[in-house]
Length: 229
Image (tube, rainbow, N blue to C red; front, side):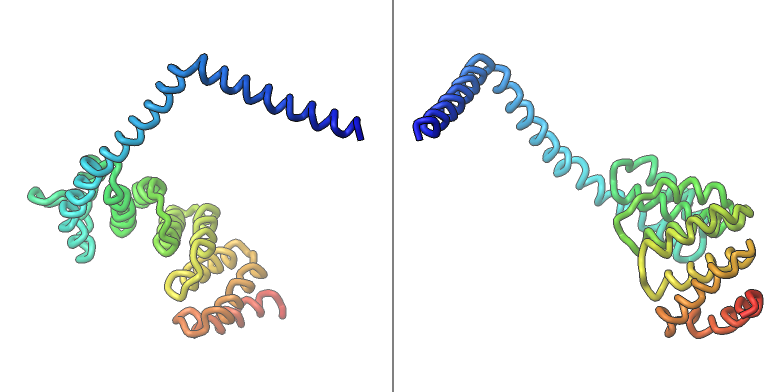
């Protein structure tokens, strides 16, 4: 019992000693700690000020400036969308003039897709590769578009990698079966028929009401014949 009390007493002394050392450290370094805390407050205030008085207005301005480029994009006028028309900015101008804005980041996506439609596949890859997004549907289209560009360049390996990423990015009826079909087509082309069949069967099972799902049976039959099933 005496030993237990002694141990408890020692623990209390250790805690008191640690508290004393902490208090002494604070007292000895009070000026430094004040500077650090003050610095943190200044940085936080500067960030809030930057966001409110600079980034937010620039974001609104960038969105306004990109309106016409988006309009040209929707009309398939991709050169005008990319470079502008002399009166309104193009996507490249938005990227250059409004860096650090979400609109500038989105302009990289539009630029990449525009170059893809114009047949400038390496430029498409360059801009799409710089585009980052948390939107899973847009991420799927980005990866699929990069797959299309690599496919046009004859790089089936990289095309397949991006088609699979597009499939994995988002499970939906709009993009997933499309990129599954494209990935399966490359598997067939490279003689990996079992993997192609697996994707075709997934389309049949998971996306029966899509165009791909309604037409996939003939692909399944063809691959089964190749596999001798």
